[in-house]
Image 1 (cartoon, rainbow, N blue to C red):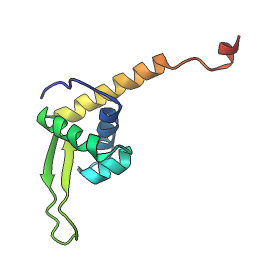
Image 2: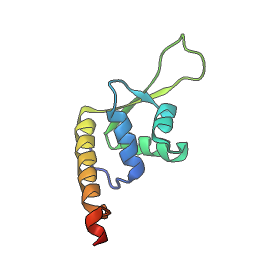
Image 3: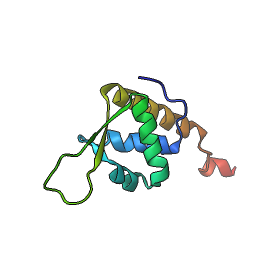
Image 4: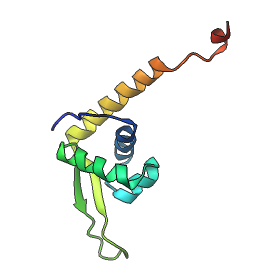
Length: 106
């Protein structure tokens, strides 16, 4: 598994969606849950897969109508790293938030 070169807000959103749940997610579902456009989500999923963080497979539900879905899931190593990355970014965000409480007005 390769480390990620860039971890932007879109990456964090996708990792968060993939961590939240016990089943693989299909691309359009990830797009809807993150609120990100397909033009950023699909390339991001491709980069995560090439880096070994994510695996993908085609849905084989023959009873479901419509086009086949590509399902994405974090690898075990990818899930561990995703937890670390999200925790690190959340702790950094808390440190950089401006103080807007009553003490800031003084």
